[in-house]
Image (cartoon, rainbow, N blue to C red; front, side, top):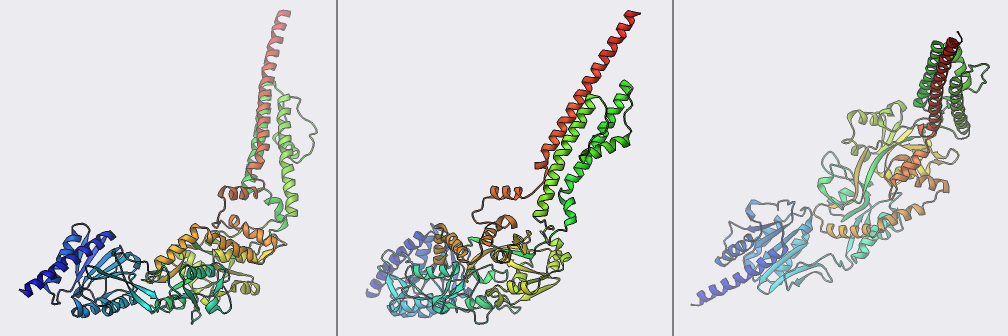
Length: 626
């Protein structure tokens, strides 16, 4: 009798546990629910009934899948959100399976906050639950509940006053464990970067100023945590991939668990992407080539370069058209009136002289030809006035050779290209073989340690014929620093054909539990305008001359690089105003010339009509007289 009664009570409790567990699972509404069971383990009848009841309840409402613990040495990687349900035998009998489950959990599960865990362990005591949750936290599990009875649902807080503490969850809700870290020490991988991370003393505790340093301090402040700043011991700064599959620098520290997040804004190499998780990138890093600015054009070329080649060709064609029209007019006069005009050589000489401003010694008395010549003289006067005005401005404001704007012209300059090793690695996949060979034909690879300061300045002072591969923000600052006030421009130029565009982000190790919280804070910083404000504040704090500051603000227009908050229409208008003597300016003279031609043609027609009417009238009068 008593064994039967105990069985009924056990079935009743199992039914309640299955019902409560089903409510918790259905409330989460994840895409896939995984049921893990130990097939080879001896399981009591009540546990088996409980598993089947829970599986029927969940599978009837949500997508679900049954998995065995024996088939998975390591928890499979999942790309969608999931609920993972584990049944553990009651009390002490469940400890071996509990340890097996902890060994199976994957600490590198991406997007850790997408995955929730539910452990059904009847009659487990607090010590066993603490052991379970400590193992879960070592594997970076964020959301885990344990059910030991119908009224006993437990969660955990890893940042309690005395370490990990158990918390009862009355409604079976998962708590936000990262809301308050209670002074927990966050470990940042950071190093000096001349624009975004300037060290304070002592750097291990005080950290950095500028935008990356501000983000790091605010992360710790919002999470009620302390911060420790860890500089890569090998001096490899951002870190790179080694041939044996290992990493250096900040990436190595993240992979080995030395630090929690890398807070220097960076691009991520293709070989590093599978091993890290990035915070959503709110800006892009453009890798650009910076070359010496083009030299000044020789003064003897000013007379030719005053007009563009297309304008010179148009003027030559216009001169020939005017010559042909004048010859046609004279031929028509000869056919109609018998008047012999000037030879083609004299016409050519007259048009050439009048175009240069010389007076006409003798000319036809026909009004149409005079109107045509007057239009030609007026056109020539306007054109030569514009030309000589441009010459005067060219002598005052120097002109320069065409800047290098694509990689096709790089080999002709014979420049040694400097850059840190990761810059060359990043552009390998984005450039064609021809362009990559041109870029690396004469290169100088610098160690990653050099990225912590402006090594480009010291190199540019020693060697003039050098080029650099830089990030866009560093390139613009480099151009502002090398601004030449006497010439009114920088000594260097950013090639408009950029080498590669990549997301600029902060990285965490794969499976980090802090990803979603850092992402929420970064989204809030972006939406409230903090990122733009800090970036502008950093620019204001840099010591430069007024002319250099104005040049820096205008770099977005000169380099075709993306400008924060720039107006595309305004930049195009400013760029358009810099061009002198295009057809937009010269079109008035041509309109005047066309009107003169049309008037001369109309005058020519009226003259011929008048001539014919007068000759016919004289013929009739002669007949009457006879």
